[in-house]
Image 1 (cartoon, helix red, strand yellow):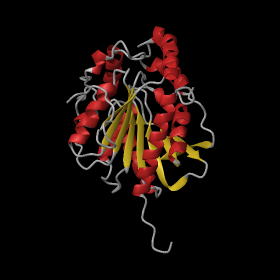
Image 2 (cartoon, rainbow, N blue to C red):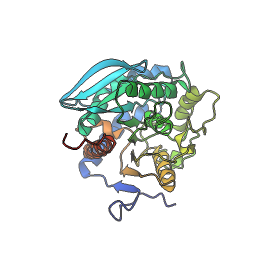
Image 3 (cartoon, rainbow, N blue to C red):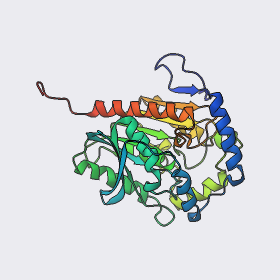
Image 4 (cartoon, rainbow, N blue to C red):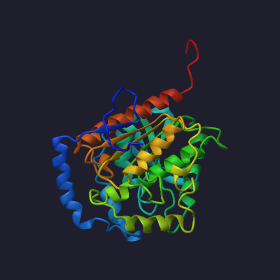
Length: 325
């Protein structure tokens, strides 16, 4: 399969869409590259948690969104609640951080933008982190949180996730519909880590272009997460799992990141299995570019696409109204 980025040739006829970079975005990314270049690959181990949260917290505040702490399925976290958000549905967002970093509180602004765009409230669980809590703790917490939402009466749930959280969202997507009897209506993954064996060609082809990550850095963080577990187990790497019966999936990824092929290969496998899956590749964009809302045109466009998709999936999953209601 040709994995070169390409323009969609017909509406809905291709599963990959390439979005050219605008001139203003090119200038903004050039400035970002110059700023972060000295620190490429230096976030490592638990010492990186505080600076990582600081970086994530810089996403602009989403106007019209409130935040509150809660515990769902015995997992603590934060609600992001837009004004007049629908109450019959929820988004469950699994946050990124290479399974070792990240607090739900730091991701409130990013997820608040997603929630506002979709018109639905979103919950971010503080799942347990490695190395203190290696696999399967994060997966167990994601499942417990999903079941907890169902137990509170929410039976119309969309999954979203970024980076390692994209991994967890896609793993959870394949696991929903079990004991809870409820399957997620769809998922959006932002630059997901789908292959913990790191076999994607972009680990080499984008090694220089990626402004943030190095292979040895990722290897150490993944080792802390999986311990001695297999990196190609479907519960650690959704690329190797079953795609049968999955609901619609959308993926957004920059073409200047080492995780590019994690997105492309997952989407290709899903489409081959008959899943409604698409990947949007954004020219020149690095990992986490959607967090630069208000600074990048690509971030605003991607956010609109994400919100529209999630809203449509929640509408599709809503119970039909009775005649005359």
